[in-house]
Image 1 (tube, helix red, strand yellow):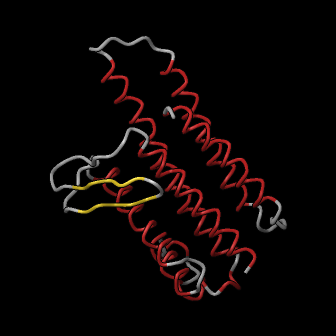
Image 2 (spheres, helix red, strand yellow):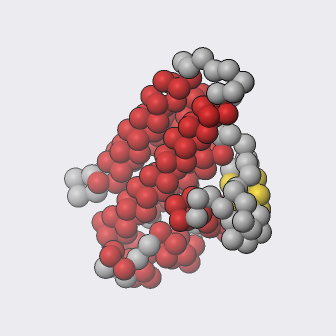
Length: 201
């Protein structure tokens, strides 16, 4: 499947997720489905850019440059979506204050982050050990992409969804071309499942 096809599949999935959470909104919780609609729109923008690049004619000399541009587009998508998930998770904790997670992380959302929400969700039984492992790898890769130009500072193998990503100190991450789209897809799927569990708990 091409990078554009992978992104279009993610676009379809985000629409389904947003619609499913919209069914749970009750006025005061309207920001929760809106977060997924915002993610859907961000994925649409990336799909449009990738579609534009897919129309380019390349030569052996320019193919590498085009591939690099497309990877940058999907990396930016991944970073933006995880940021949106972090903000939406804080909103969800505030709006679902009776869930028990707010008591574990505190109600001042300026002082909490996605990792503390993940830890509290595990303690509350909303996330499994496997989910937490995937989230930890997603956040590690996000931090490397944002702060370290995707270069690892320690060796590790991250497993998220159906891909493995090798981290070697001083080298850029190694993974297939669709790595950032797969990471984004898995992050959104995990967030959607968590959000529905939180709202219905």
